[in-house]
Image (cartoon, rainbow, N blue to C red):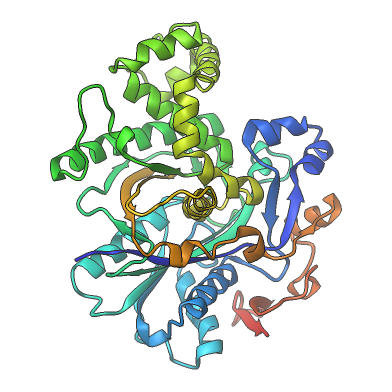
Length: 464
């Protein structure tokens, strides 16, 4: 049985920090953020918003535009790394909000959980629910998977430049109009790591930036190797001599903690895929230097990062490699469109991969490309750490969905924050009733109980 994404909806907070203003305030060259990281704006939640109401708002938009009733939904999963409770699942908050609109107990039949594995958890949620549909357990009902997060880092840290917030809701069924997942090719890689984590009670993560970036590349590569074998064994892709499997994937969507990380991930994959192909020689000739090799090629991540000579040369080589004709063509054809939304919104953790997918569809369609039958590959990564690589094909009815996509209109009119306003929100100096924007047809947080018997209880309302 087929399974895939029938439609999707986004909800992005309308407050934002301009990267140029932010860079000046922090004493950083604005080009470092705009050109170096690929960041122009970072979405910031208002004081009356949290991951639950972001998820509920995306979910409501998805249901309303598809005329989906609660009785049509058999499962509702929420994937996040911005959990509000160590026991109560985020999807229960979402169901509580949706029942304000659809009526008491309208979702009581609906199964679901909160999924957690850093940024890869949304991909696991999609895989689980796709298999629920394939197994026939759905019995004609759809599943909704929502990825919702607030990327927040300590003030003054390097991570502060890569913040953002938002949610993406996806409707899954057995007759998807948008994307049908390729069966029996999804591949994973997993190990115990401390590259990025958030201990109990800490609002912001502990990040080992260089280590995490390299681990992301290695883990995705490992999952990709497993995906290649499955794709060839199942026969969904056939390659000829001198080709790589990437030649047969029309578009790539990568996890994007910041936009330019997608470029790094593509460079890492292509270098390792092209080394044994005839095209590598002419590509190397364009760089004007030999590809560097670490002193201990089979060493640990720590030993590679400690090899300063190699790291310097590898950085230089990567810059030259990404300027070659072959890389530029591949990048423009298969990746560039998926990065556009990230530059406008920032890091969405679990939602970043799917915002990239949404971005790819919208901006390729605007070019006039016929997307029907195109294969899209996904490289998902979550710190801690795990990677998942999978793919799917765009369906014949995609225009019905994609022709209506307009990122700027869907976000709505945005308000640029002053540095003072941003810092007040960041440091939790404003209460939910001190929001900067008026709510419009959306769920908002109104209070958090602090009495001993009800401490932590959150109350939400729908503002019509």
